[in-house]
View (cartoon, rainbow, N blue to C red):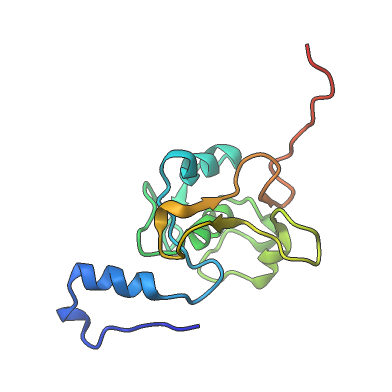
Length: 153
């Protein structure tokens, strides 16, 4: 893991800042997805999990946009908690108990690697990321529930 820092933030141009942030590989969920087209994760998140508040900032206040400089998976987990989707950990996002991880399930076998998002491109390429929010993919506290239709009408 590495975290780059600008020697003097005040003198850093916006382009330099973007390049520095793109170079940081500091966790498995530290990516930022483009969020457009087939990879438009925000509308899927709001619809599939019925999030009334939508996304929230670090204080738990609703915001109407995806932060460009915050990892999308962190924004997703924060929104799910603030919207009460994991009652076992409460709705306070200022202190998130690690037991929250017990209620997040992604495709993959129990006890094995589970994949919530993937890219076939560079880690820093925002257009390459896909967050698994459709079908029987990411479930939070066993929600949403999907029912298999066994007969066609």
